Image (tube, rainbow, N blue to C red; front, side):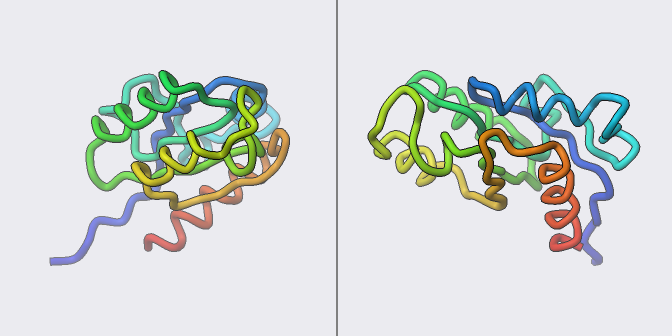
Length: 132
């Protein structure tokens, strides 16, 4: 039986911070991510890709893990922005993000502060190519 190839991704964004605003600009008329098969959703059950971005506190981290557990397979996780990749704006300790990374398997790392929408779209295309 041949594996089903996904041509579009439903994206759920978790976390707080400026990365979310930059990421959502990919929906606008300049980038029009929907024409490329990238759709933003509000429910974890509808999502294929969980984007963890911005700064997290313990409650936000628990919410991101809960979102991931509620997603249907196949599912992927992307870490977006400097706060989740290096240091958290609310804490100089890396301990919280290390705990989150143990619970969420990372498929994409998208650096920047905040990353440009082009880099997000490019990373999505690389993920889809890799899965094909």
